Image 1 (cartoon, rainbow over the protein chains, first blue to last red):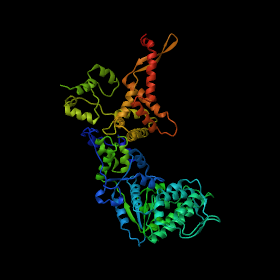
Image 2: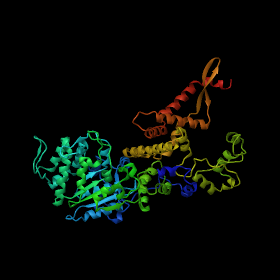
Image 3: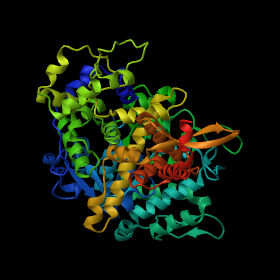
Image 4: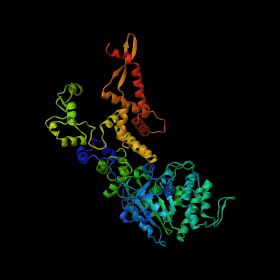
Length: 385
Length: 230
């Protein structure tokens, strides 16, 4: 919106613009060859502070495995298709969190990070960067991008049979399980994790004790009716195995403040309104962010887009999570994602020039000024040039 | 001595030349015939300063620049004209957004084509700059004649007429916009428009087809051309 206003010629003082453009030389694109700075390795575990502002590439397999079901921000998704690669910029907040994940004390209760910041400045990309690190480092991922999508509309809403007054969204629960399977199947079969207790679903359907954990997940995917209960059992199992130090787990939830909204668009079968915390899968995910287990970490983001419209004024965690969410998470480490610094802007514009996305290098200063170094707006502003 | 560039400016802007007076100065104009047009493009301003032609501009009254003109890198007079013709109901912000998205889409299409290309020849033939494609498309869509209905002896004839530069541009833009609007439902305007621009720049597409169709009719009706006078 701000960018739109700035672009309106009558509102932008002409002398401001003139400062940028009047004396610039004409640049011949064929002669000018710019390459963005890239990190030496593509493994996020090896990056250090010297790599801040540089790019690293996420391989196609990792991309498909981690980010196929639910996606990146739409703009980044479009750019992956156009540029034929997905390159992340290494930034300070992500490095900070990755460094503390590397030196995690397995006996202490889980660490909780709450990423916050203004729209378009890289919260979700930081979040994806950390997920990629965790995946490469052999962590089990419990990955939920935008839980509020489940709260908008659901094809099937039923009453839960196991939990009184709660409701199930079985299709979405099954989809989450499918996603979990794609991300973690190899790792869990390598670690040889098994179901701890015998579970009787019905007279004919029984999950035996010591069956592979993936068998349980498959049961949830095949019998959608039980998907929400399977999620609950799976999460309990993973928590216990982590505490026993047989695996490490990263809980990654984008838009965590959506859990504490006063209401959602869902309607129960008896037409009563459903707040997010009345949904069983949300209750199960809430268990993951409690501090009653160890050898794990939770990386959460809070975002104004996941709040109700009357609650979007500030970006701070206390404001967005309300008192209820704040007390649930406390203690946590807030991590602020700021706008790009001049060095990062320079490298980002170099990257766009390398990819032939920015064809007027003489407009670099103007873009930087108009975008206020917000990477989302910067990419938008590079579009027509 | 004036070099060729300033000569060009001088010829078109010189208030004393009769052609300029008849074409540019309206009778109720705010500006008298001695006023000259402003030069808004920073590149041209720089050229004027370097070549020393500034002297010719120093003691001349200059018209104020149009309200929608800026020195921004996003500005192009031809694109501004296109935006204005695209606009309906005064929704200029929307149209500007649509144009930006169109250019973005052109670039996306071309970069994807570049990535898919197999030989160097194909790669070198691809133009990335959406502005160049835009100008080429309009140039290729401009007709050189038009048909007017004239009644002679109780019968109407389609008579070919020559048209002015302004009208050529208007016809080209109008046809391009109509081609962009003619799309199946799930496709958005910028996507369709981008395809249309790229096609027109390569002398293909429905807008160029309309131009050639008009030329064909003018050719067929050349026998009626004398009805313009008689």
